[in-house]
Length: 150
Image (cartoon, rainbow, N blue to C red; front, side):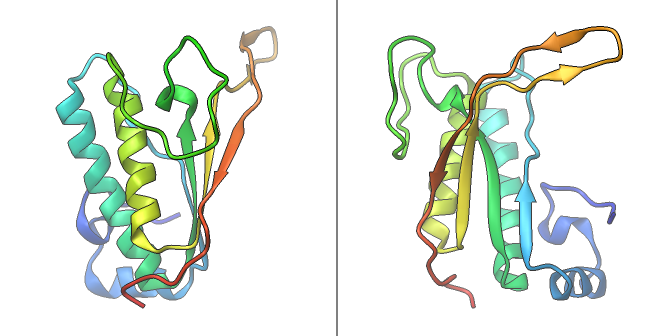
């Protein structure tokens, strides 16, 4: 494990540590998100964009492909079924959903070989009780293409 921060260039690592990390990684699994629905949409979009920029640049530097956990929050909570295609902003979308759409868009535009997995709910079990239920997840794959910075 390497301590760092998602929303700082090179994860806040010094140049030699960032270079060593990039040399040792071939695949990145990005599942970090700010899930505070009480903060404003602009703040959530800004934090997410900084983190996505850091991850995408790292993937380019490391020549690594990306697995990104998105969310069914990219779709309205009523209606559907929704197609497994790029999502678009809709009226009253949460900052979280808008940030996930922006991240998916950035990934597709980056040229990084990537897979986007849109999760719905997770199941968390304790020894005594089930905390929440799990629904199926969907998967949206990006076509593998060459990173512009390679």
